[in-house]
Amino acid sequence: MAAKLLLLFAICRLITIVGLTLNPTDLFRFGIHGQLTTDAHDLKTVSVDFGKLTRSEPLAVLHPSSASDVAKLLRLAYESAPGFSVSARGHGHSINGQAQTSNGVVVQMSGSGRSSTPVVVYEKLMYVDVWGGELWIDVLRSTLKYGLAPKSWTDYLYLSVGGTLSNAGISGQAFNHGPQISNVHELDVVTGRGDILTCSMDQNPELFHSVLGGLGQFGIITRARIALEPSPQMVRWIRVLYSNFSAFTHDQEYLISLHDQPQSQKFDYIEGFVIVDEGLINNWRSSFFSPNNPVKITSLGAGGNVLYCLEITKNYHDGANPEAINQEVEALLKKLNYIPASMFTTDLPYVDFLDRVHTAELKLRSKGMWEVPHPWLNLFVPKSRIDDFDKGVFKGILGNKTSGPILIYPMNKNKWDERSSVVTPNEDVFYLVALLRSALDNGEETLTLKHLSDENRKILNFCKESKIEVKQYLPHYTTQKEWMDHYGDKWSQISRRKLEFDPRHILATGQRIFEPSF
Ligand code: FAD
Image 1 (cartoon, rainbow, N blue to C red):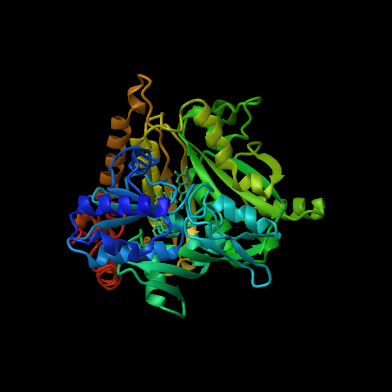
Image 2: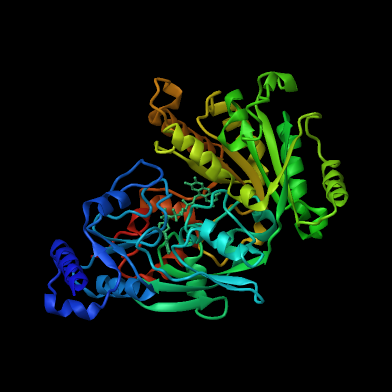
């Protein structure tokens, strides 16, 4: 009874704030079993994200106990006048306030107090059903009990399933398996009308494709059915360096072209990064350039120029013949043109490889360097213009202090489903270029938030002026005109989808795509 009264109090406060005219005695009929709160700590937590660039406080936070709670809240937002916005928040690892809202409720899908919906592994059918707010690290831990694991990953596992599926979810496996959104069989989604619908390629396909890569615009994912494969136990993790950009991209493109080959004849993961700053060669994303044995760029003959590091892995199972693994790796490496003697290799458990960024996170946290502003810029660059991007950005706009890793790796467009809501460049192969910067306030001008943000703007302007048709990944725009340009030919489809699934523009207003219509 006490809990019910608290809930009643919270809803009354919310309703007072949003100015609805509901009779409080009607409120029990909403039957929300989770916790709806206006607690100051909760409000503060959801007002910021990993980017630390924007702050926006909602009216209340819902910790749902089930999909039905989410549906009841959305139905209330949809049916009431004037209405209020509802934004799902996974782990809050956006950069620009995408999961925030100032005139409504944040549904906190991950973390304590969230739904206790269990992870259910279907061993024989090779898939797993998970709550939308589940973190990928917990999905992995659950599936490993059955010797299984998802196929496609992000570099960092403390992200929610609903959050990454609303973007795409990419890492070095994407060339082979496609992004995470290409590895989902089925979803339960609560639409902006408050309906709970199951969707897949065959059932409510329009909703299924809308939500995948849909930036939270068309519904809140409450359950995802994710494809699994037998999990390898070990990984051979290899890094090789290049001073010649064309040789580097040629090799990356060659390696991803092997995606249809048998597993023994291709790598399992292909990424890369750019080193414009010698400090970075031993940085947090490159921890096995060992601190005990720091690499000197000069010792590699690059003469202070930009270096490129190809990062590849080969997975293997316990009991695999080591000689066979060596041979498979050597056969692939033989075809590459990296700087001789620049190879770094380590073998480690699969889980440790997948969870590698968390290890780095703990180190950065201990130095107070995790909770800082992150003016990240993620771009998809068409293969035909990646040389121009290199000349203009890596060798041009960026100075020799980048304040964070710069990832670069190509993907095959045919592994992306065109029916999803994501936009990618119109070429068979495109690159992710991710400038993962941390702004520091240590007196160095080139590391300040202002400097890094200006540099991001310069990069975008350079692409525009040079007619390099990049698409932002984890996009951030502030006007609808920019969103229309971003979506290009897809804009009319996105607008139609919005009208169908969220006609009052209640959902994920922090993306700033559609003006709320209340
Ligand atoms: P949030 O920031 O909480 O939400 C993001 C958006 O999704 C919001 O619009 C929100 O409303 C919506 N949303 C959240 N949950 C749901 C749901 N259940 N249903 C519908 N909409 C929902 N991305 C990659 O692809 N590959 C990487 O390797 C990668 N590495 C990263 C490493 C770090 C350290 C960080 C901070 C981010 C990384 N990202 C990467 C980006 C990440 O995928 C996105 O920021 C993602 O949105 C984060 O998930 P989240 O759960 O924190 O989402």
